[in-house]
Image (cartoon, rainbow, N blue to C red):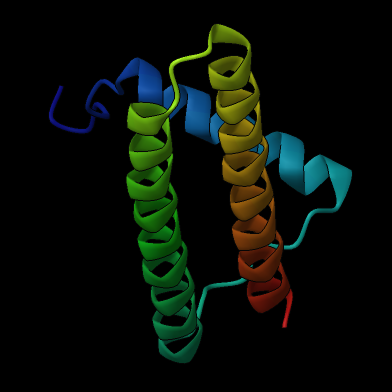
Length: 99
């Protein structure tokens, strides 16, 4: 019984299945270099700061706005800006990963 393999967790089994699916689909796995990791961290920090700035501005604007319709417009604009920043961040990170 000493040559039995240890039991795998559900996570490990799922990851093996996903790796096999990627291999069957021809997806190439490349490790991220240290330089890419630094660039990705810088991008994440930049956009985290931008999102924090947007949140502060948003809260300030909400405090000044009493009209419910205007508040709804401010909320919608805030959501659009957050989505735009997230999309930009994700696109830049993906570009770095592919390079």
